[in-house]
Length: 132
Image 1 (tube, rainbow, N blue to C red):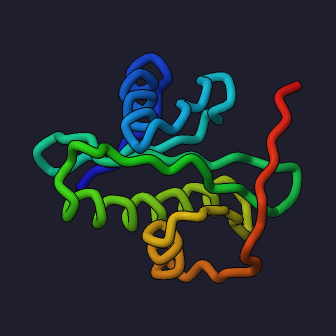
Image 2: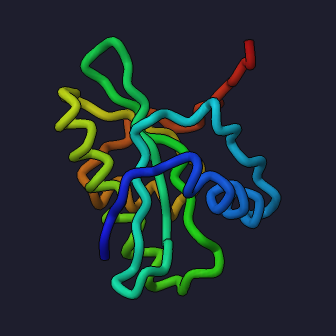
C-alpha cells in the first residue's frame, strides 16, 4: 500500500464521487478541505481512501472527512482505512501537534480509530456546522 498527498486538481473530482456514492452523502466543497490530505493506493495503483488533517492554533489537530472508494474490494478498503488513520496521525505529529480529535457515527470507522489507539471521550454528540 502507498500513500500520496492530496491535490485538489488531481483528486477532488474522485473524492466528490466517493462521497456521493455512499448513500448520497454531500461532497465536501473543495474550499472546506485543508491542505493536509492523504490518499491511499493499493500496490497495483487502485485509489482506496482519503482523509484530512485540520490544523488548529492549539496542540490539537482534527482528523476528518475520511472517505473510501465504494468500488474497491471491501478487504482492501478495510486495511487501507486503518493505514490511512495511522498516516494521518503521523502527519499531525510531524506538523507539531500532540493530540488528534475526530468524530464519527460510523461504527466501522470508530473501530478502526480505536484500533489505532484513539479513545472514545464522548458519545451521542451532535456535530453542527454553519457556513459563514
